[in-house]
Length: 327
Image 1 (tube, rainbow, N blue to C red):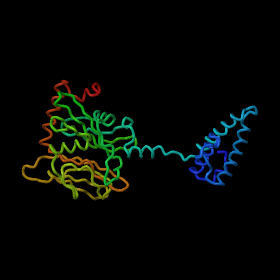
Image 2: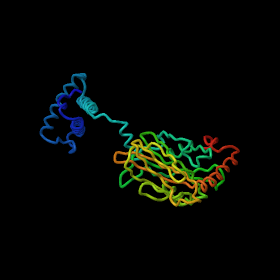
Image 3: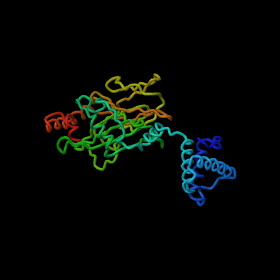
Image 4: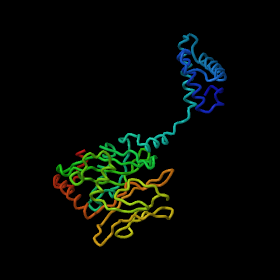
């Protein structure tokens, strides 16, 4: 940096002063936006220009035209402005864009585990489909809001696939959390269009709501009760594990020793076998439970396996072994 007169200003002020000066030079003093804010800035400009002109003449050959000197001075001031600009925190900028759902999906690196797919005992491995869904979704809930504020990173995406007959067409719904350039899938679910009415569905959460009308079981957590928990704020620390207590309850344990019990309601001798899936997310203003469902396994698994078996028959092998050749 060669203009010590600017050292007493913070980076933003110095950059603004230089930007106005450069604009004034380029416009020949005809742009009102380039005017000095006060007499002290006007005097500062004279000092900066005097120093810049001397530097330009010292560095330039004596036969340069005035127009060349002018361009040289503008270039010097541009470089000075760049040097004095505050460094961009690229990671923080990416995180802000990711939280707001403004990063392009195709740049996301997708992380998922085989175990997040339902039904869990079907040897179903949808990880390739999950990645395809995140990068090229047919529909999305890019952000989840709670009381008017974005839950950091929480999102859901969905995409249609078909590896069997027309009746086996399904919408793969994937819920999870974005963190910078990463997407961590926490739940995935195949919703078959022949079993659940998806007509007119425009978002993944709407599709999940319709699915729970068919296969969901009412459950209770804290002071909430229903079949689909889209988002709830809870007062606790980071999630540790979701594990079964008994045939009707599951426990979410937290690092601070506290816990939340997820309870199937309407329990009786003929109560269905269930499986619960809930995503947990932390943010600066709270901790959240998201995308909560409790599944009637006895009803859902046979219906899902019916479609999955047909996939295997059509291809004479597991459909997922051919996915990379198909999409």
